Every structure is written in structure tokens, then in C-alpha cells.
Image (cartoon, rainbow, N blue to C red; front, top):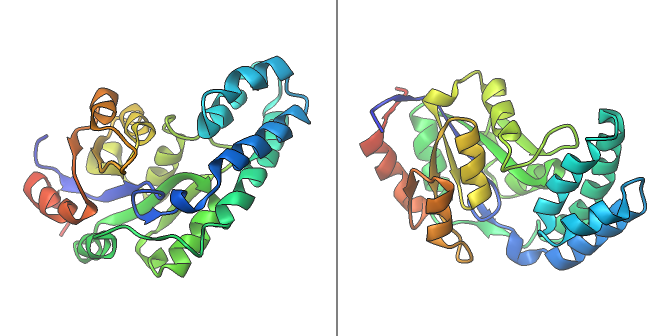
Length: 234
């Protein structure tokens, strides 16, 4: 990648900035979201076929399917119910989660160089807000876009593009930092450079296949890498 003026970085939240997932019962959250979908107007066959793909894939896939025959208002109402069910489990991990190594140091490095920062996360808007505030890093981010009924979640680019829109920057002057293939695919769908920092459960080859431009071992490496690759906004 050629040297550019780096104006913004869009971060994922869980397993990138903080370790939330280890303190959330995702299995029960999945089951609760499934029950919500089955209690609505969603076709049972559709819901069950999407359920086997994992929680966040299910949330995306059900939305895609019901959007074919329902109005946007109906889709958003159903998604809001499912999202709320998942949020209750995420909230249980808010007070137990902790910052990933190198997180604060990296955020401060970027702030000192005038780089705007945002968070685009599949976790709920309220959960993201509580985590960032309780861990003392909310002030670094001008924009936080969490899971919202009106937006498709990653691997769609919607949340990332909303962050860029709110910050007033372009994809070509911004990068994405995340831990998963969903983060990488969303960044690529937004035509952005993406740096992956895999969590312990993420396979490097999966990130490579998704199209990660660079893969680091830790957030602690990010300032040095950015110094070598890009010219931050001074």
C-alpha cells in the first residue's frame, strides 16, 4: 500500500479493543434470539435454516430473508426485538471485560497525531457505550455505531460507512482494525485497507482468505506498523 494521509481508523470492539466475548453466554443468547424470531411473523423454516450458521450470521441472514417479503418497518421491528434479547446477555459481561493489550497506548498515539477514531461493532449500541465509558476510552471516539435495526451488520459495510460519513472522511484515507473475517470482509466491501489482529479463536488463514491486508499479533504493534505504512495527519 502506498503512503497516504491517514485521517481515520474504524475499530471493531469485542476482541479488538476489549475482551467481552469470554464473559457472554453466546449459546443462550442465540437460543433467546431464535425464540424471538419464532414468536414473530418470520417463517419457521427460514429461521431454522439460518439458525445453524451461528448467532450473528443468523441475525444477518434472517434479516436478508424476511426483507424479501416484509416492509422495512416490519423488518426493523423484528430485528429490534431479537437485538434486545441478545443485548441482555451482552450486558452481563460489561463489568467483567477488560482492555486488550496495547489498546490505550495505541488510541493515545492516534489521538496525538490528529487521527479521528470510530467504533463499528456487532455488539449493541448501549453495550458499546457502557464498555467504552466504563473503561475510560470513550473520549477517543467521535463516532460509535453499534448494532442497530436500521443497519446491516458486518460483513456488510453499512456500519463502517456510517462511521466514515459521521466523521466526514473517505474510505481511501481511512483503515479498519478488527479481529474477525467479518471485519475484514466488511472493510473490503467498503473499499478500505484492513489490519487484522486475530483473537485466540481466529485462524490466521481465515483472515488471509477474507482479504486482510496485514495481520498483526497484538494491538501493541499497530503504532509502529502505521508509522511505517502511512503518513498520519499531522
